[in-house]
Amino acid sequence: MRVLIIEDERRLARNVADVLEQRCGYAVDVSTDGEDGRHMALTNPYDLIVLDLMLPKVEGMRILRDLRAAGGTVPVLILTARDGRESVIEGLEAGSDDYLTKPFDMGELVARCRALIRRSYDRPDPVIQVGELSVDVSRREVRAGGRPVELSAMEFRVLEYLAMRAGEVVSKEDLIEHLYGFEAERFSNVIEVYVSALRRKLAGDGGRRFIQTLRNQGYRLEGTDP
Image (cartoon, rainbow, N blue to C red; front, side, top):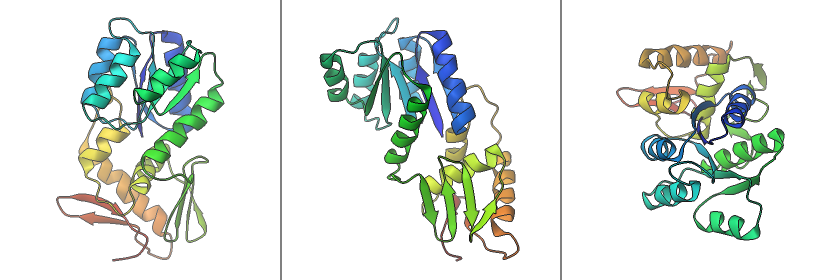
């Protein structure tokens, strides 16, 4: 999952980014001014945007309205020091999905971010069941045929995204866009390595295949063998 934080308080932005990277395994981009943040929000595929309202150059509410006017459906969580009822109503009516007032608890922020992302993929339950495969995106635990499966951080991130879109064909390019931040080096062949490792670990001794490859199209997570 890939998240954009638009927040001009640099220490707060970095703290939020660190928490989302460490606890959730998300790829996180950070912008500290509204102009740059608006450009990033409009030109990159994010799974969530964490947006401050009081920003230099372009205010957060303008970014939100521009994003929705452009057809962007990415969930937006507003972070702000404004705690008046009118600000809450204005943000929600402009298209935000949730609202958190500063100061806030990091645990609550994490829970809200996870819930918003799951909801955007129509996955309200943190445990995604795909046939005999179970992926708990909150506890970051995987079971295949009842057997626990140990995955590396990146292997889990690949599986999490495929599970969110179970039954759909996901291209390598799409995986790369949602798994890596703006500054990360991106190599398409790395995805093949992670998928190969996932297949091996999920199959275990039973030889079961959960991830299908569609030539020149991408990958699909299925609950049954083809």
